[in-house]
Image (cartoon, rainbow, N blue to C red; front, side):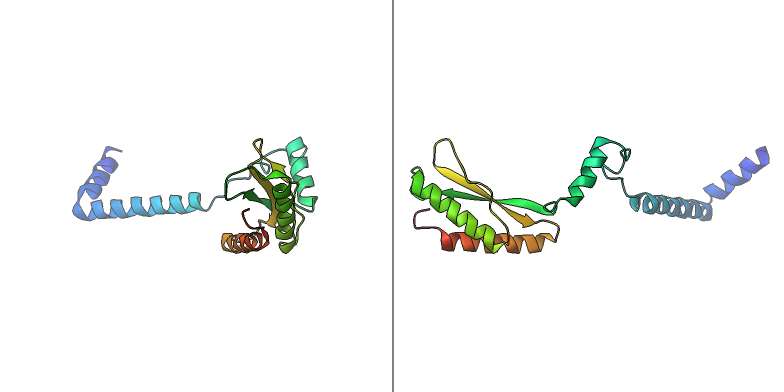
Length: 153
């Protein structure tokens, strides 16, 4: 056994042996990195038992008609900084509906800030597509909002 270790030590410590050892270690490291890098982590719900409430909720969510939608929030304020008032809130609701209609959706309810200076309307958009497409949709929605908003809002 001692003879085997002596020969192995001699093979590794020579110039040629050192390069061979380095190359072998590099290949093993790259192989391990490739194997680990291609492994996909299970989704949070995918790792749960199928009988769990979370897994059942995830299955039900996939059946809902709006599971692909995410909200784009339209914020309305007056350019002079004063409260929107009844007319400004009504205009925000109207513009929100036009914006949502241009996206083929229905607007959410208008929510007004406590001080009355801002109103928001949520507009659902399809979020299961490339970010560049979503950005284009958002830009189009902004154009509709700007064109539809009354002066000063």
